[in-house]
Image 1 (tube, rainbow, N blue to C red):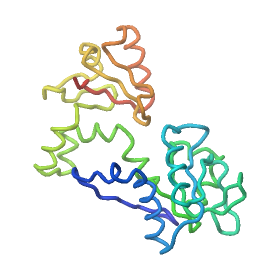
Image 2: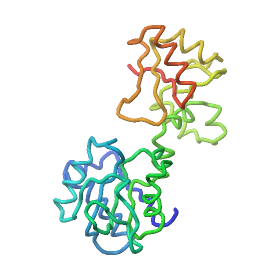
Image 3: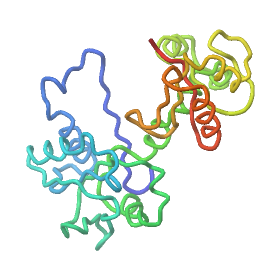
Image 4: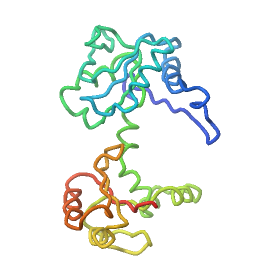
Length: 244
């Protein structure tokens, strides 16, 4: 990890219902991430998004942090800077201890967020929801890798891992012009197959969430489906078999 980036993994099991028994369990876990690094409690925390994107649950997180005594608020990433070696909230003029990232990593390429990246990499503030996990694991093209037997062979997946993947991962392929294996294991031309089997297919942008940009083949005219497939060739999209 670069600078102050925190790679915190919270292990749970199918029988772990701590978020039900303790509704504040999530924010307590955020505080625990800070404690594990610095040995004390954070005083000021921020939930950070960018230009109003990804706000569905952030107000619950902010309220939960305040409820357990942490000074917390939602702030735009462009308002985070570095002052006197500390991550700093320009709106409230306060140094920060704990920051929860809730933003699209692609936004970090804009010059407006250069100070945010500097704060992330050079200050003692603990940034949770690490940027690497968002960049790699939230992208649906990773599902295409797991779904494709040729990729799984290259990754040397174990029999047990393959069994889990087969049980939970639907057939998924990165949209591109070429041949691959279809849901039945036969070789197919991907775009021809997508048109012929439109009603059983779903088209999804790789880097989006909460249903943004999702196109269901059975709800779409053939003409519109063709246009969407053509558009999907210009930016990362996946074609997925609809689960019913």
